[in-house]
Length: 298
Length: 233
Image (cartoon, rainbow over all chains, first blue to last red; front, side):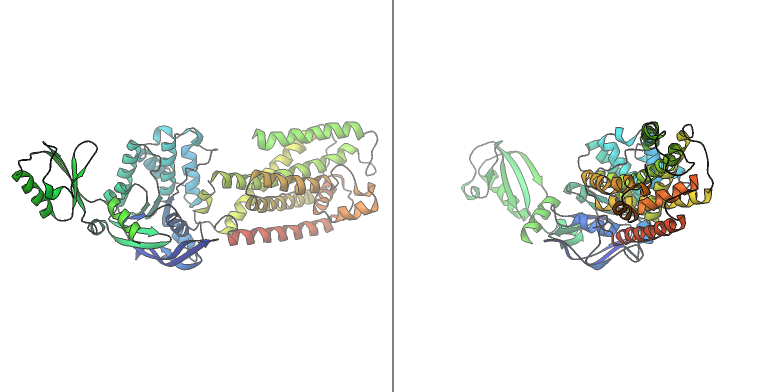
């Protein structure tokens, strides 16, 4: 059984085709990244899975439960961290989590509430009104709310937008732990280095269509454009390489290459010309390069 | 507590002080019933109606405006459960405010309750009608302004022009006819019957009208909730 299964999902908002036949299967226990530029349809897809938006056609299921016909089971299986920083200003942190548990029919959930507050560093703030929490704390509370009913599938819609480095790190440690414990994670983010580090598989959306869907390591292989940055002890470079070497503002030279033999040839020519390399840095292709490339091509 | 219960009680008390002071000696609407005794049930009912409406409508619009409506849309709640929860909260608020208003007015009007069964039936039905109407308004309104318009141009006229402060028999025939088209008139008239044993119309007719209104408004509310109108896109 798939944790998330979406087939031929379509949704139109007035003149905008938000989703145009999206099909996707996410296995249980996966850490899946959903990437795309603004307006690509990421939030619409998440909203349909969460039951907040109704698709025009197509089907979506969480843990085998259709999100429309079997919405009670599908919503029980799903925890959603919304993109917007929303909170109920009338309650404190503990009350908020108790009320949220009640919505899922959980009356005696204090032990789990204490545990998630502990892991999200919310325990010292348990009795504070949500209004008095910092942005980061509110974000953690949203994560806690999504987890009160111990859902096997967790969807996080840009959870680290506007969050400081420490909180981001602790949040990812916690989410990674949940994933190791068997939870399926679906993440949307604009921080591609996060997606590269965390997600085993990535889907890329553009204009409501999936334009790439593969394991992260396979996607990284799609581009073989490496970059080397060199600092030389002279201003002159061999004439044969002048067209390929680019000068950076800091005085170093940069070369893009797809085969390491190119770099080897350059170094050999420099040696022959008695040019000494005083510093060299290699830059591997990253997800940002792949993403940019795919978005341009499609 | 202060805003939701104490404030409406104080408002009702002010109405009672002013109107009963001015009219007590001059007006006897029903034979043997003082104006204060006539006014109290109307004020209690008016407070219940307005507060039951406010509870569901303001809860919804506030949640929509701040975005925390997602917390009740994400859980596995059916549209019927959603309806019953908001309706139940509105009824509780209406009844608590009604009890509060009644409590403070006991000092100003002699205590009598010849028909407690009618009181209970009308109180529950009235709060339910307005609670359901509040859900409709809360779903429909996208801004506080729109909700205020709903309240100012529909709820307030319906409650003020329903015989809270007067018997419709004191009105010209035309306005009597118009009043009979106002469902809130039946709610106040029937509720008053429970207190003073006299009314402008048969309380059984009022109960029928109120029940029909409740069924119609609840049907509309459930239809909106089921379709996800302005809640689920």
